[in-house]
Image (cartoon, protein in one colour):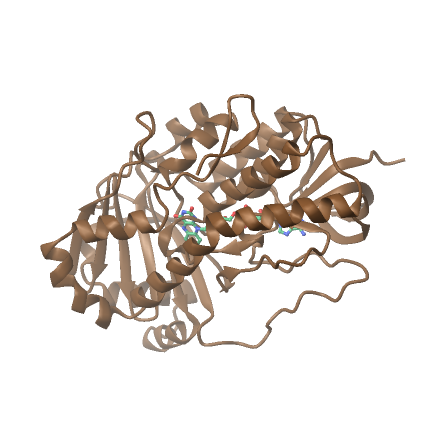
Length: 416
Ligand SMILES: Cc1cc2nc3c(=O)[nH]c(=O)nc-3n(C[C@H](O)[C@H](O)[C@H](O)COP(=O)(O)OP(=O)(O)OC[C@H]3O[C@@H](n4cnc5c(N)ncnc54)[C@H](O)[C@@H]3O)c2cc1C
């Protein structure tokens, strides 16, 4: 007979692995299921705000991160057309971790997953959760091995959905599939990322690009390689592809960015691309967490996705995992009955909205502006005169706002 788990976590991104670590630490029997084999690269700008460094330390990977990360991120820049405006990033009030950093997802996600394994979490990888049946306290999750096609049915009390937002959610038996918009919308966003060697970009600077129909960011990560990641609307991508016929979508989109942001040449210099472009999409940022309890606890992008322009998705993944684990563990032993889970869900949703809803809405506003460089360029003279405004915009995006944390006893606390 299969072991009964207190909780199953679907997806081992930063949200899923962090939740699994914290619950295992509290004595829960946890299964963590990830469909992809690690290490794997992922479309992401890979910047982590300083507010998360104490969390990563508490999760047990603080020391392992530093040698794999780029230098401290101390400055932000706005790149629009031929102009670049620079400003200091706001420092976080923790003297040990005043600045954020950048680290490849192939490193971050692997470190967190291995830490979960070390803390006693049962890892299923590469396995996929295919369906969920039953009710809170008595779920059965069907898992399929990615390569062999072997299947297993795991009995679990509680389900944590950390599957991200770029793939379909796991179907729940007896419930209609979550509505998926299959209609193409011109506002759909596509995301691309590539790494570059020999870029002229200086370490510690975080330039944000504004171009017609999109925005992007560039940073020096570990091994001195630059990560360039950007989002582009479907209609702008179509125009880019007709402007650069014969090119693959990512290359045409890159050409579009470089053509509209001529200042980018000063940051790329003689950069040489390392490896292939990665692509994802369509992505549709927004709040996915409903107030109604349907049996699942959602964290990370599965709960809500901020436009990547603010580079806060990893923060929100880690912090929502901490918030959920704090809510569940604070309640004592794993709760099997549906009523108790519904009450905990309501408490979690309330905390989630307090911490993240505003950040998601503000990110949408920044994104809409950045995709309209004719508006941004109108504001550049004011920013050039007063770069502190840029610093303030970064502060508003939540970069130095403490979220839920982990107390000395390993329990999650809300010290916001
Ligand atoms: C262009 C771009 C730039 C970005 N830049 C930044 C940045 O600089 N800083 C930042 O903080 N954030 C950034 N983000 C956002 C960040 O990448 C995400 O918010 C973050 O990855 C969310 O983490 P997560 O754990 O919720 O989900 P994910 O990281 O998406 O992990 C979900 C995991 O679940 C797995 N999975 C899915 N379905 C199943 C299933 N059925 N069974 C098993 N496993 C499953 C997937 O394989 C995946 O590994 C950026 C995003 C984009 C698009």
